[in-house]
Image (tube, rainbow, N blue to C red; front, side):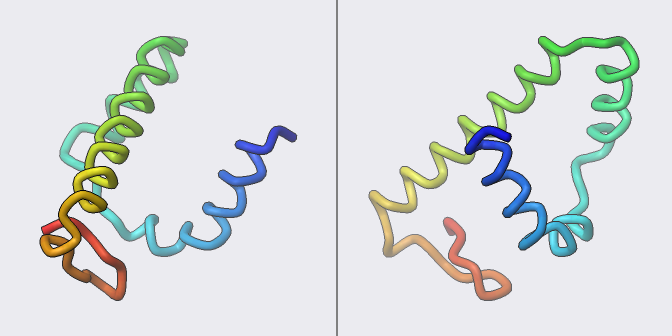
Length: 79
């Protein structure tokens, strides 16, 4: 198991229940299932990279402007 896989499994264990309750935008689950059914690995990886990049930008912005960060459900999120 790679270090990323270990990290991923730890996050799934810690936050899986919470995130299971989080809705995704309409059509996203269906789109992911279609990409999987089509064997479109490139599309899935692009989707993950896009989400990773957006998350990194939010994290960077929050670090640059901590006064704009607020808490939601006990977690800090950008305002």
